Image 1 (cartoon, helix red, strand yellow):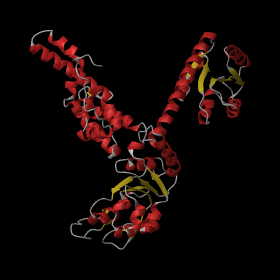
Image 2 (cartoon, helix red, strand yellow):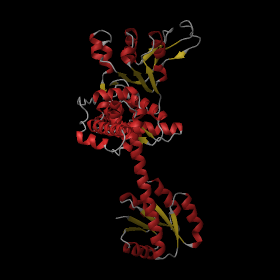
Image 3 (cartoon, one colour):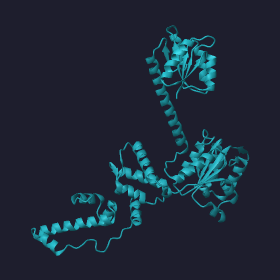
Image 4 (cartoon, helix red, strand yellow):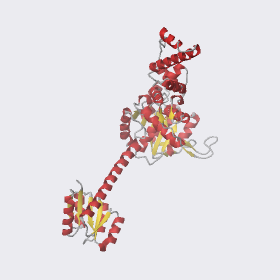
Length: 470
């Protein structure tokens, strides 16, 4: 039940308005002054306040200002006599919703309350939707419907609020940088820089990229350059493919993590820097430690909190969801109008193993969208997807794919006319039977059937239409 507070120093006006509102089913409270109103609001916040403009001690304008300073946010409707209309307008400028001139009748009260409650409900719904959208956009900036990804999101919620070092592992193309950005955006460092570094760069460049250098530190160093550690000050440093770091650089990285300071190339002066480290790799660091390719002390330092990203093939329901998203994004960026995927194309997408994960899926959809007209068909997809899908859905036809025509059937055809026409009809019967047989064997997978028959998809489609095969 909606609560309404009436604030008026005239008891008769309070009583009259209370009677009208109670008959309409509202819970009504009254206050005889501005101070009394503020006390009632703190004790039991109302949804709507009817506030008289002219009151002794604290008038309606002053009371309105105090109400706006409270945590509650009720809808305020000013009550004003004709002589105080200007004050009512002033109140609206200060945040009041509307004003009601005295004297008023039941109809006016009903109209202004219904309008106020309708807008209040709409505002609440919009606020809730914005909060939900903000939470999902800020945290779940990875498109997914997969339960195991939702488990990862729960971990992100916990780890993002800390400064603990995070190690993200997973196959190439699974979205490790996207996940790292999500952690950063939900951390207390969200307003500071997120600095990504690809560690799979030439060894000669890694150290200068990370730590920076002074002018004249080496040939070509014509000016002082800040390193990524300095650029990430108060923010997040993301080291992608950290397993590729040379051993010599690993030692300096460990020191930077422990001491929170770095030294530029060509300098002896330490520089303090405040950063949060998130690292990612697609290799087995434990194995790299055993092979002495990665320092064990650095591994233990960066492996404080580990998140394992599953490959796309293990993200249930995500292939088609992501494919539609990438297609929509492609249309927006390029002004195209590819509407979707044919049933056969969807089956191919779902059957493929996606060794390149999300990255491969995105590039495949964009390439297909370039070739497609209204809808993406199997022949628009990259050929390696079709070939691998053929192997995974291998279909072996019997040696004799067609039941032989019986002598009576052949005689019936022969009696119809000249040999040329007989041959044509027999071939058509054979072709129809063959196509139907292959379609049944492939469970009506048209792309697969076309490849077995040695014809293109469009030819098969026309033949099916010719022989009325659905």
